[in-house]
Amino acid sequence: MIDKSTPDRKIIGKVKLCFYKFPNQKKNKYKVLISTNVELNAEEVLKIYTQRWGIEVMIKDLKQYMGFNQAMSSKYAPQIAHLTIICVFYMMFCSLKEIIHGGNISE
Image (cartoon, rainbow, N blue to C red):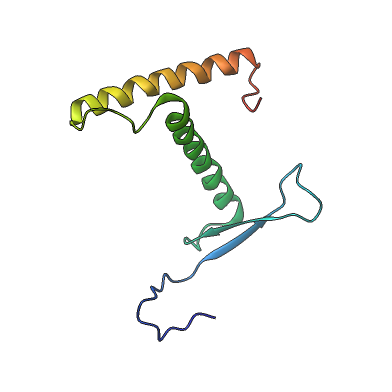
């Protein structure tokens, strides 16, 4: 229980907990997603999560393999050029991986 009298705690309002059993998970293992939008149903929460997860993976790959966030210049134009180039390379590699693996990108 959260002590509402503590002044440094921020009240965020209601949240919705959605429990999911994903394929290939151990018996009785569930994942929980928390949504601050209580109007969404469980399917919509999962759809948004899967879209967001793809973005997270892309940013991790860009940082780990393509040098994203390591531009030597602190000026705007070179940083945009750097980001554009690594995004183009990333899309090329993703397309090549999809062609090689026949649409199964998880390999």
